Length: 267
Length: 355
Image (cartoon, rainbow over all chains, first blue to last red; front, top):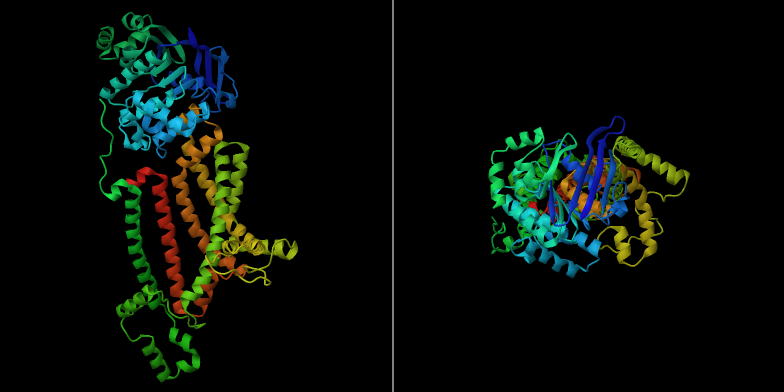
């Protein structure tokens, strides 16, 4: 069943002479499944994800509909949107060294929204944070709460960022290029963790990436975007083995090890 | 793929408390700089043109060679400059800054009342400027390009452009002479006696002594000089804080904080302002220096018995011990500000502690 349903989403920037960057895309996110959104830079992937949480700059105009279990998110007042952000729909950003505040401890960043959303006491929130860090396999979780982001490796930082996103048990996770800033060996671990969390928690995930290798490794469904439109969508297997659109074929051809990843995925 | 946590198990005290090591390193640097300040003040004063002996003894006595010789002998002026510097340094370590030629009182005693008077004004001004600057700067950044931002830009430019001494005179004329809202010059109404000295800041000392009436009188006398001095630094801080906040508003960690659904106010205080705190701190340090130099003229207008007034009087009387004392104190104040700023860097940013 669809948890988050995007219908005819349009996004334009500029007041006087608006430029449309997303032109009527539709997507459905289902619990326990990873919906991939592929495409090259500037195709409108990231702004689409940002639009879900109302995080676009004030100059952006959003049209169409984004429904979370029936509730319309487009045009929702910020105060009400704040009860959904981080609580029911969470987001993981591309570069964990930029998305974690360098001057705040991991503990503070892992508990402030938990306390705001779930009204937990400090001690309970801390315990929850330790559990989360254990779940995303950050070593010495209790100790880690007192540390700052720069004291962790890139892969661990992204695990922490994922823990922050999952802290309030959201139904939907928006992952914007979550592995792009990481080493290839670290990427595999993060993707593995993502898959595991989706299965355990019945999460609905929107995975935005330009990396088709990543896409083929974890996504259940794929939509390919170009110039603000979805040119092709379907199950990952179908799209990768039998691409219908010329652009999808071009993308796949430009990827040296696409076929290889797919074989691994099938095994 | 998992690697272990970055730092190894700490063993030495300064590894366990990185902040402590940081403080000690900075303290060491400050001591060296302090020595440099004494050297510069001493050499500059030793090289000053003009005849301090004549100034000290007066025309008549200075024409008597015996008196002059006795004076030179008594003050060790026949010794070489390095020797005199060592004597100066030894006296300094004992808290002896010499005796004022004009008043005959120890310079240290005179500075002990003048410095707190100036610090009180400067601290008041920095608090006011920071409070106003933070508010206006943050608002301007949030309303970037809109009418509010434009208005605030003009206001801050006005603050930067208006000469402080002119504003001091106009404010004194308007609020004291014309409207009679503000009290007259000085630190206190003549009817009051200064509070027993603890910090030397009248407002604080009155509070410590449990005298609210005295406190409000001191506060009222403080108001005009502080506001006049603040205007420039408000302009300065508003502009810098706007720029610093704008930069932080565009970072991923602020977007991430919004994506977490934190209330807007909390995002600003805990994430945005904290992120902008280092550049803001730097400007506040600079602003404090600006305030100290601005206070000389403001003190003159409000007959404020502070460092500026003392420096001026010492200079026109060629009271070299007084001038040296002022030079030293100003040097120390700057060092203390820089030390405090460095220290706060370490408190605000965990990455600095390791550097």
